[in-house]
Amino acid sequence: MTKETVKLNYLHIAPRKVRLIADTLRGLPANEAEAQLFLRPQRASKPLLKLLRSAIANAKNNQKTDPDKLVVESIQVDSGPVLKRFLPRAMGRATPILKRTSHVTLVLKESEKKSEPKFNVVLSQPKVKKEKKAKKSTAPKAEKLAVAKPKERAGFFKKIFQRKSV
Image (cartoon, rainbow, N blue to C red; front, side):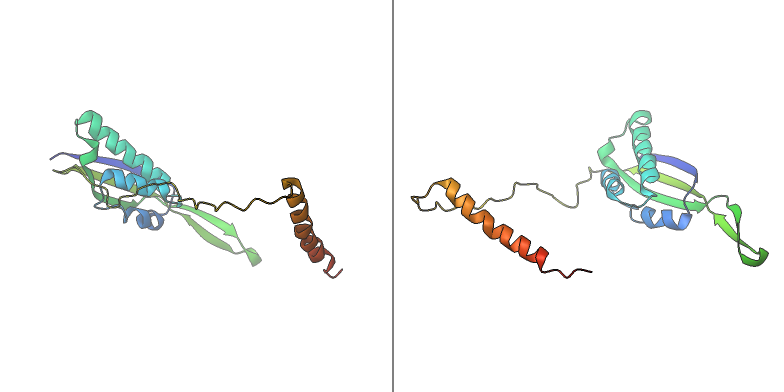
C-alpha cells in the first residue's frame, strides 16, 4: 500500500476557514473529494482542489498507482506565520489586524478496492406532457392571436395607470 504526501505552505487564508473545508474531505475517495471541492463556493476550496489534483498526479506518475483507488487518508491544516498590521482609529489609537496564513498537509493512500461513488446520479430528460389536439375552428390563426393580445395588454396598462403618482 503506497502513500503520497503533499504540502501547501503559506496559504493566505485563515486556518479556521480552511479546516471547515478540509474536515469534509477526510476518508473520501479522491475522485469524490475532487468533486466536492469543485462545487464548493468557499475561497479555500480552489487551493485545496489544486493540492488534491497535484497529489493525484504525483501518485499516478511517480508511484504508478490507479487514481480510482486513491483515498484521502488525512488532511491537516496548521497555522503559518501571522502578518501583523494596524488600522488607525479615533483619538490616535490603533487596532491590530492579524492576517493569518495556513500550512496544509494532504496524505493520499491506495485502497485495495476501487472506490464506488456514494450517489448514483442519473441524468434524464424531463418528461414532456403530450398536448391534446384542439378542435378545429373555422377562424384563422391570425385572428386568434389578435384576440389574445389585447387581453394581456389591458391588464398591463391597467396596472400601470392605477399607480399613484408621487
